[in-house]
Image 1 (cartoon, rainbow, N blue to C red):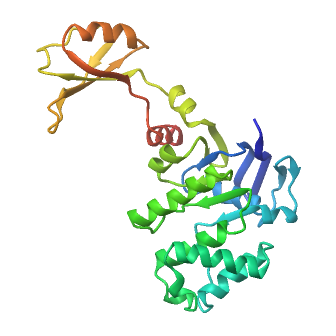
Image 2 (image 1 turned 30 degrees about the vertical axis):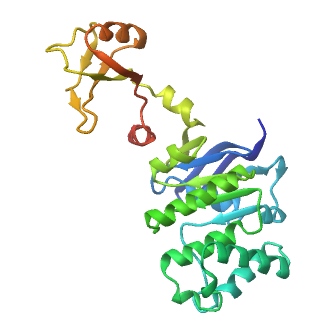
Image 3 (image 1 turned 120 degrees about the vertical axis):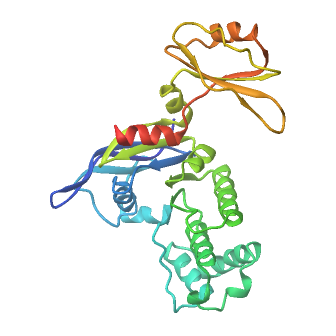
Length: 304
């Protein structure tokens, strides 16, 4: 597995507060990597180190196997949570300026910006000042300037904040397109539904320490709780005949389909045995193990 970004032993303290404590991360090339943690966990400190805004007290960062230097900044696109456009500058002028800071020639940058502005119906705002934009429009402009120079690694810090559902879907689709074209994406967010929808890998940081990391599927399976859901037709038996060590929840009926469902909690794994027992007591439609959501896993590990 090729590693796009390798953080080894990163530590950073601010007086007596330790923001990061020997953080080790390996972010696979071509992944959408969720960087998770509560407020104050150390995520922003890590992202600022990657962008070389601050330096670690100890540890190292490598981008595609090379020790990071200021020259690598052009290979990274960073959309910070705190948006930062100059309000008095014209929109097109500022977008062009930011593109040139990332090494793009003026003519190429202008051509690509025009394409983006037309596609996102922003062309009428080219000569207007940033302060005239709505919050959502300003965020779109900053998203465009983040990805325009086609960096190898893209970092999005709460990219959906402030967007309505339509524009949030637009940003999500653009992220998926960039991923399909080969970009490695680091997504820092508190929206666990976005993590489950988009991310292939995640790391959870709490109090400056990595709590867990791996693929989303592996982490969900590692935190399984032997919970199973049965959907069936017809009426439920008056009493479920279930093995010792298994409890059943209240049966629920779906108003649209008329199907019923019940969840079983077992003390140990027993999917096949439990299904065999239940199949004789109803007309089963589906039976599946219920894996914990990323939201459940986040809360469990942060509060531990």
